[in-house]
Image 1 (cartoon, one colour):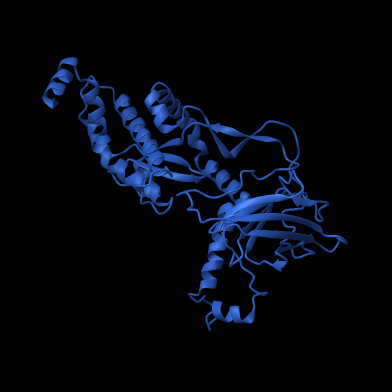
Image 2: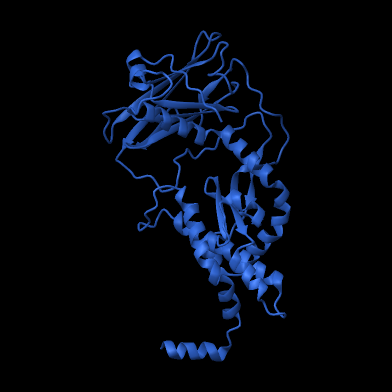
Length: 386
Protein backbone atom coordinates (compact mmCIF):
# COMPACT_ATOMS: atom_id res chain seq x y z
CA UNK A 1 0.00 0.00 0.00
CA UNK A 2 1.33 3.41 -0.98
CA UNK A 3 0.40 6.38 1.22
CA UNK A 4 0.86 9.94 -0.07
CA UNK A 5 0.88 12.81 2.41
CA UNK A 6 0.19 16.29 1.02
CA UNK A 7 2.36 18.78 2.94
CA UNK A 8 1.40 21.80 0.84
CA UNK A 9 -0.40 23.58 3.68
CA UNK A 10 2.35 23.09 6.25
CA UNK A 11 4.03 26.25 7.47
CA UNK A 12 7.41 26.96 5.87
CA UNK A 13 9.16 26.58 9.22
CA UNK A 14 7.65 23.12 9.69
CA UNK A 15 8.64 22.11 6.17
CA UNK A 16 12.23 23.11 6.93
CA UNK A 17 12.19 20.96 10.06
CA UNK A 18 10.56 17.99 8.31
CA UNK A 19 12.52 17.73 5.05
CA UNK A 20 16.27 17.34 4.64
CA UNK A 21 18.11 19.69 2.30
CA UNK A 22 18.13 17.01 -0.40
CA UNK A 23 14.27 16.92 -0.23
CA UNK A 24 14.30 13.15 -0.75
CA UNK A 25 14.51 12.24 2.95
CA UNK A 26 12.81 13.20 6.19
CA UNK A 27 14.66 14.46 9.25
CA UNK A 28 14.44 12.72 12.62
CA UNK A 29 12.22 15.42 14.14
CA UNK A 30 9.17 15.07 16.36
CA UNK A 31 6.86 16.24 13.55
CA UNK A 32 7.91 13.31 11.39
CA UNK A 33 7.15 10.78 14.11
CA UNK A 34 3.87 12.52 14.91
CA UNK A 35 2.80 12.19 11.26
CA UNK A 36 3.85 8.53 11.18
CA UNK A 37 1.88 7.79 14.36
CA UNK A 38 -1.21 9.45 12.92
CA UNK A 39 -0.87 7.45 9.70
CA UNK A 40 -0.53 4.23 11.68
CA UNK A 41 -3.74 5.01 13.56
CA UNK A 42 -5.65 5.96 10.43
CA UNK A 43 -4.61 2.82 8.58
CA UNK A 44 -5.21 0.55 11.56
CA UNK A 45 -8.67 1.93 12.35
CA UNK A 46 -9.99 2.55 8.82
CA UNK A 47 -13.08 0.31 8.40
CA UNK A 48 -12.60 -0.03 4.65
CA UNK A 49 -9.05 -1.30 5.04
CA UNK A 50 -10.17 -3.70 7.76
CA UNK A 51 -12.81 -5.13 5.45
CA UNK A 52 -10.23 -5.45 2.66
CA UNK A 53 -7.82 -7.22 5.02
CA UNK A 54 -10.51 -9.68 6.08
CA UNK A 55 -11.53 -10.31 2.47
CA UNK A 56 -7.94 -10.99 1.40
CA UNK A 57 -7.45 -13.26 4.41
CA UNK A 58 -10.45 -15.35 3.38
CA UNK A 59 -9.30 -15.42 -0.24
CA UNK A 60 -5.92 -16.70 0.89
CA UNK A 61 -7.28 -19.59 2.94
CA UNK A 62 -10.66 -20.21 1.27
CA UNK A 63 -9.53 -23.50 -0.28
CA UNK A 64 -8.56 -24.78 3.16
CA UNK A 65 -11.54 -23.58 5.17
CA UNK A 66 -13.73 -26.56 4.30
CA UNK A 67 -10.87 -28.91 5.18
CA UNK A 68 -10.44 -27.21 8.55
CA UNK A 69 -14.11 -27.37 9.52
CA UNK A 70 -13.93 -30.95 10.87
CA UNK A 71 -10.88 -29.91 12.90
CA UNK A 72 -12.77 -27.02 14.48
CA UNK A 73 -15.74 -29.27 15.17
CA UNK A 74 -13.52 -31.66 17.12
CA UNK A 75 -11.90 -28.83 19.12
CA UNK A 76 -15.31 -27.37 19.91
CA UNK A 77 -16.53 -30.78 21.07
CA UNK A 78 -13.48 -31.28 23.27
CA UNK A 79 -13.95 -27.89 24.91
CA UNK A 80 -17.70 -28.35 25.45
CA UNK A 81 -17.16 -31.76 27.02
CA UNK A 82 -14.71 -30.32 29.54
CA UNK A 83 -16.12 -27.73 32.01
CA UNK A 84 -12.57 -26.78 32.96
CA UNK A 85 -11.53 -26.02 29.36
CA UNK A 86 -14.77 -24.18 28.62
CA UNK A 87 -14.26 -21.96 31.65
CA UNK A 88 -10.51 -21.53 31.15
CA UNK A 89 -10.73 -20.58 27.47
CA UNK A 90 -13.96 -18.59 27.83
CA UNK A 91 -15.54 -20.15 24.75
CA UNK A 92 -18.60 -21.70 26.36
CA UNK A 93 -20.63 -19.45 24.07
CA UNK A 94 -19.92 -18.34 20.54
CA UNK A 95 -17.82 -15.24 19.90
CA UNK A 96 -18.95 -12.60 17.38
CA UNK A 97 -16.64 -11.86 14.48
CA UNK A 98 -16.94 -8.08 13.79
CA UNK A 99 -15.66 -8.39 10.21
CA UNK A 100 -17.24 -11.51 8.67
CA UNK A 101 -20.84 -10.38 8.31
CA UNK A 102 -23.80 -12.40 7.14
CA UNK A 103 -26.75 -10.82 5.38
CA UNK A 104 -30.03 -10.87 7.31
CA UNK A 105 -32.12 -8.53 5.20
CA UNK A 106 -32.51 -6.98 1.78
CA UNK A 107 -31.01 -3.71 0.69
CA UNK A 108 -28.61 -2.04 -1.72
CA UNK A 109 -24.91 -1.32 -1.71
CA UNK A 110 -24.14 2.01 -0.10
CA UNK A 111 -24.22 4.89 -2.57
CA UNK A 112 -23.19 8.18 -1.01
CA UNK A 113 -24.13 11.59 -2.35
CA UNK A 114 -21.63 14.04 -3.75
CA UNK A 115 -23.20 16.77 -1.61
CA UNK A 116 -24.76 15.33 1.57
CA UNK A 117 -28.14 16.36 2.90
CA UNK A 118 -27.20 15.71 6.54
CA UNK A 119 -24.07 15.36 8.67
CA UNK A 120 -24.92 14.91 12.34
CA UNK A 121 -23.56 13.40 15.52
CA UNK A 122 -24.46 9.80 16.19
CA UNK A 123 -25.83 8.85 19.65
CA UNK A 124 -26.84 12.42 20.39
CA UNK A 125 -30.12 11.39 21.97
CA UNK A 126 -30.32 14.41 24.26
CA UNK A 127 -29.79 18.09 23.68
CA UNK A 128 -26.03 17.73 23.96
CA UNK A 129 -23.44 14.97 23.84
CA UNK A 130 -21.05 14.76 26.82
CA UNK A 131 -18.05 12.43 26.80
CA UNK A 132 -15.40 11.59 29.40
CA UNK A 133 -11.76 11.23 28.38
CA UNK A 134 -8.63 10.52 30.49
CA UNK A 135 -6.06 13.25 30.08
CA UNK A 136 -3.55 10.92 28.37
CA UNK A 137 -6.04 9.40 25.91
CA UNK A 138 -7.62 10.47 22.67
CA UNK A 139 -11.38 10.29 22.28
CA UNK A 140 -13.67 9.46 19.39
CA UNK A 141 -17.06 10.68 18.26
CA UNK A 142 -19.06 9.43 15.31
CA UNK A 143 -21.23 11.18 12.76
CA UNK A 144 -23.84 9.79 10.43
CA UNK A 145 -24.22 11.18 6.94
CA UNK A 146 -25.25 10.35 3.40
CA UNK A 147 -22.00 11.75 1.93
CA UNK A 148 -19.84 9.75 -0.45
CA UNK A 149 -16.67 8.21 0.96
CA UNK A 150 -14.44 10.71 -0.86
CA UNK A 151 -16.43 13.76 0.26
CA UNK A 152 -13.48 15.35 2.12
CA UNK A 153 -10.69 14.01 -0.12
CA UNK A 154 -11.75 14.48 -3.73
CA UNK A 155 -10.20 17.11 -6.00
CA UNK A 156 -13.52 18.44 -7.31
CA UNK A 157 -15.37 20.63 -4.75
CA UNK A 158 -14.49 18.68 -1.60
CA UNK A 159 -16.22 19.19 1.71
CA UNK A 160 -14.43 21.06 4.48
CA UNK A 161 -14.39 20.05 8.12
CA UNK A 162 -13.55 22.51 10.92
CA UNK A 163 -13.05 21.62 14.58
CA UNK A 164 -13.03 24.19 17.38
CA UNK A 165 -12.17 23.62 21.05
CA UNK A 166 -13.40 26.46 23.27
CA UNK A 167 -13.69 28.55 20.07
CA UNK A 168 -10.04 27.90 19.11
CA UNK A 169 -9.19 26.00 15.94
CA UNK A 170 -7.92 22.44 16.37
CA UNK A 171 -5.62 20.64 13.93
CA UNK A 172 -4.61 17.60 16.00
CA UNK A 173 -7.40 15.27 14.91
CA UNK A 174 -8.09 12.49 12.42
CA UNK A 175 -11.30 12.18 10.40
CA UNK A 176 -12.24 9.12 8.35
CA UNK A 177 -15.47 8.73 6.36
CA UNK A 178 -16.73 5.33 5.24
CA UNK A 179 -20.17 4.13 4.16
CA UNK A 180 -22.21 6.74 6.00
CA UNK A 181 -20.13 6.93 9.18
CA UNK A 182 -17.49 9.55 9.92
CA UNK A 183 -15.12 8.79 12.79
CA UNK A 184 -13.49 11.79 14.43
CA UNK A 185 -10.52 11.01 16.69
CA UNK A 186 -9.19 13.93 18.72
CA UNK A 187 -6.34 14.59 21.13
CA UNK A 188 -7.17 16.81 24.10
CA UNK A 189 -5.85 20.40 23.96
CA UNK A 190 -2.53 21.09 25.62
CA UNK A 191 -2.68 22.57 29.09
CA UNK A 192 -5.95 20.96 30.17
CA UNK A 193 -6.24 19.39 33.60
CA UNK A 194 -8.55 16.79 35.15
CA UNK A 195 -12.12 18.03 35.63
CA UNK A 196 -11.73 20.63 32.86
CA UNK A 197 -14.72 20.94 30.53
CA UNK A 198 -13.87 21.41 26.84
CA UNK A 199 -16.58 22.66 24.47
CA UNK A 200 -16.18 21.41 20.91
CA UNK A 201 -17.86 22.76 17.77
CA UNK A 202 -17.73 21.08 14.37
CA UNK A 203 -18.57 22.75 11.07
CA UNK A 204 -19.01 20.92 7.74
CA UNK A 205 -19.56 22.86 4.55
CA UNK A 206 -19.06 22.71 0.80
CA UNK A 207 -19.75 24.84 -2.28
CA UNK A 208 -23.50 24.08 -2.23
CA UNK A 209 -24.18 24.93 1.44
CA UNK A 210 -25.56 28.34 2.38
CA UNK A 211 -25.73 27.12 5.94
CA UNK A 212 -23.11 24.56 7.07
CA UNK A 213 -23.82 21.47 9.16
CA UNK A 214 -22.97 22.42 12.74
CA UNK A 215 -22.78 20.29 15.87
CA UNK A 216 -21.51 20.67 19.41
CA UNK A 217 -20.38 18.30 22.14
CA UNK A 218 -18.54 18.52 25.44
CA UNK A 219 -15.65 16.53 26.86
CA UNK A 220 -14.90 16.24 30.56
CA UNK A 221 -11.19 15.65 31.19
CA UNK A 222 -10.57 12.71 33.52
CA UNK A 223 -7.43 11.78 35.50
CA UNK A 224 -4.67 9.82 33.76
CA UNK A 225 -5.54 6.21 33.03
CA UNK A 226 -3.41 3.41 31.59
CA UNK A 227 -4.41 1.71 28.37
CA UNK A 228 -5.19 -1.99 28.41
CA UNK A 229 -2.39 -4.08 26.94
CA UNK A 230 -3.03 -5.28 23.43
CA UNK A 231 -6.27 -3.29 23.30
CA UNK A 232 -7.52 -0.48 21.14
CA UNK A 233 -9.70 2.28 22.54
CA UNK A 234 -12.72 2.53 20.31
CA UNK A 235 -16.23 3.84 20.62
CA UNK A 236 -18.80 1.24 21.57
CA UNK A 237 -20.93 2.07 18.53
CA UNK A 238 -19.68 0.11 15.47
CA UNK A 239 -19.38 1.85 12.09
CA UNK A 240 -22.72 2.20 10.38
CA UNK A 241 -23.73 0.87 6.99
CA UNK A 242 -26.64 3.06 6.03
CA UNK A 243 -28.23 2.06 2.77
CA UNK A 244 -26.63 -1.38 2.80
CA UNK A 245 -28.03 -4.76 3.62
CA UNK A 246 -28.64 -5.20 7.29
CA UNK A 247 -25.95 -7.36 8.81
CA UNK A 248 -25.30 -9.22 11.99
CA UNK A 249 -21.95 -10.66 13.09
CA UNK A 250 -21.35 -14.23 12.01
CA UNK A 251 -20.57 -16.64 14.82
CA UNK A 252 -16.98 -17.60 15.50
CA UNK A 253 -16.22 -20.24 18.09
CA UNK A 254 -12.52 -20.94 17.69
CA UNK A 255 -9.68 -19.90 15.36
CA UNK A 256 -9.41 -21.29 11.85
CA UNK A 257 -7.09 -24.35 11.96
CA UNK A 258 -4.94 -24.98 8.89
CA UNK A 259 -2.36 -27.74 8.39
CA UNK A 260 1.05 -26.68 7.08
CA UNK A 261 3.36 -29.13 5.30
CA UNK A 262 7.08 -28.92 4.62
CA UNK A 263 6.68 -27.21 1.24
CA UNK A 264 4.97 -24.24 2.96
CA UNK A 265 7.38 -23.81 5.87
CA UNK A 266 8.93 -20.65 4.37
CA UNK A 267 5.61 -18.78 4.56
CA UNK A 268 5.53 -19.20 8.35
CA UNK A 269 9.28 -19.22 9.04
CA UNK A 270 8.92 -22.81 10.24
CA UNK A 271 11.65 -25.37 10.73
CA UNK A 272 11.33 -29.04 11.67
CA UNK A 273 10.82 -28.29 15.37
CA UNK A 274 8.12 -25.59 15.12
CA UNK A 275 4.56 -26.64 15.94
CA UNK A 276 2.16 -23.70 15.71
CA UNK A 277 1.98 -20.25 14.12
CA UNK A 278 -0.79 -17.99 15.46
CA UNK A 279 -1.49 -15.21 12.94
CA UNK A 280 -3.48 -12.26 14.23
CA UNK A 281 -6.39 -11.23 12.01
CA UNK A 282 -7.22 -8.16 14.14
CA UNK A 283 -9.52 -7.48 17.09
CA UNK A 284 -7.95 -10.28 19.11
CA UNK A 285 -8.75 -13.03 16.55
CA UNK A 286 -6.20 -15.52 15.21
CA UNK A 287 -5.70 -18.13 12.50
CA UNK A 288 -3.81 -21.24 13.68
CA UNK A 289 -1.31 -22.87 11.32
CA UNK A 290 -0.18 -26.30 12.58
CA UNK A 291 3.13 -27.76 11.37
CA UNK A 292 1.94 -31.24 10.51
CA UNK A 293 5.48 -32.24 9.38
CA UNK A 294 6.98 -31.44 12.79
CA UNK A 295 9.94 -33.80 13.31
CA UNK A 296 8.72 -34.89 16.76
CA UNK A 297 5.37 -35.93 15.31
CA UNK A 298 7.00 -37.65 12.33
CA UNK A 299 9.36 -39.54 14.65
CA UNK A 300 6.44 -40.79 16.74
CA UNK A 301 4.65 -41.89 13.57
CA UNK A 302 7.73 -43.72 12.27
CA UNK A 303 8.26 -45.75 15.44
CA UNK A 304 4.61 -46.20 16.35
CA UNK A 305 3.49 -49.70 17.26
CA UNK A 306 1.45 -51.56 14.62
CA UNK A 307 -1.55 -51.43 16.94
CA UNK A 308 -1.46 -47.62 17.09
CA UNK A 309 -3.54 -45.55 14.72
CA UNK A 310 -1.35 -43.12 12.77
CA UNK A 311 -4.27 -40.76 12.15
CA UNK A 312 -5.02 -40.76 15.87
CA UNK A 313 -1.46 -39.73 16.75
CA UNK A 314 -1.61 -36.93 14.18
CA UNK A 315 -4.94 -35.75 15.59
CA UNK A 316 -3.57 -35.81 19.14
CA UNK A 317 -0.67 -33.60 18.07
CA UNK A 318 -2.86 -31.22 16.09
CA UNK A 319 -5.55 -30.76 18.72
CA UNK A 320 -3.00 -30.69 21.52
CA UNK A 321 -1.00 -27.76 20.12
CA UNK A 322 -4.23 -25.92 19.22
CA UNK A 323 -5.56 -26.19 22.78
CA UNK A 324 -2.19 -25.14 24.17
CA UNK A 325 -2.08 -22.21 21.76
CA UNK A 326 -5.57 -21.07 22.77
CA UNK A 327 -4.65 -21.27 26.43
CA UNK A 328 -1.44 -19.29 25.84
CA UNK A 329 -3.27 -16.59 23.89
CA UNK A 330 -5.82 -16.24 26.64
CA UNK A 331 -3.10 -15.91 29.28
CA UNK A 332 -0.88 -13.56 27.28
CA UNK A 333 -3.80 -11.33 26.29
CA UNK A 334 -5.24 -11.18 29.81
CA UNK A 335 -5.25 -7.45 30.77
CA UNK A 336 -5.78 -8.33 34.40
CA UNK A 337 -2.42 -10.05 34.82
CA UNK A 338 -0.17 -7.47 36.39
CA UNK A 339 2.86 -9.76 36.15
CA UNK A 340 2.89 -9.57 32.37
CA UNK A 341 5.78 -7.73 30.73
CA UNK A 342 4.45 -7.80 27.18
CA UNK A 343 4.85 -4.44 25.48
CA UNK A 344 2.74 -4.97 22.38
CA UNK A 345 0.44 -7.45 20.72
CA UNK A 346 2.98 -8.30 18.02
CA UNK A 347 5.14 -10.15 20.57
CA UNK A 348 2.31 -12.50 21.57
CA UNK A 349 2.35 -14.76 18.46
CA UNK A 350 6.13 -15.05 18.81
CA UNK A 351 5.73 -16.28 22.38
CA UNK A 352 3.06 -18.76 21.36
CA UNK A 353 5.31 -20.07 18.59
CA UNK A 354 8.27 -20.45 20.98
CA UNK A 355 6.32 -22.17 23.75
CA UNK A 356 4.52 -24.63 21.46
CA UNK A 357 7.88 -25.42 19.86
CA UNK A 358 9.26 -26.27 23.32
CA UNK A 359 6.24 -28.45 24.17
CA UNK A 360 6.05 -30.38 20.88
CA UNK A 361 8.64 -33.10 21.79
CA UNK A 362 6.69 -34.20 24.88
CA UNK A 363 3.15 -33.66 23.65
CA UNK A 364 2.36 -37.07 22.10
CA UNK A 365 4.31 -39.10 24.69
CA UNK A 366 2.49 -37.25 27.43
CA UNK A 367 -0.96 -37.83 25.89
CA UNK A 368 -0.31 -41.47 25.01
CA UNK A 369 1.48 -42.50 28.20
CA UNK A 370 -0.75 -40.74 30.72
CA UNK A 371 -3.91 -41.98 29.00
CA UNK A 372 -2.69 -45.56 29.51
CA UNK A 373 -1.89 -45.09 33.18
CA UNK A 374 -3.45 -47.93 35.22
CA UNK A 375 -5.22 -47.32 38.57
CA UNK A 376 -2.49 -49.26 40.41
CA UNK A 377 0.21 -47.08 38.89
CA UNK A 378 -1.67 -43.91 39.79
CA UNK A 379 -2.02 -45.15 43.39
CA UNK A 380 1.70 -45.94 43.53
CA UNK A 381 2.60 -42.48 42.25
CA UNK A 382 0.37 -40.85 44.87
CA UNK A 383 2.01 -42.95 47.61
CA UNK A 384 5.53 -42.05 46.52
CA UNK A 385 4.64 -38.38 46.24
CA UNK A 386 3.15 -38.43 49.71
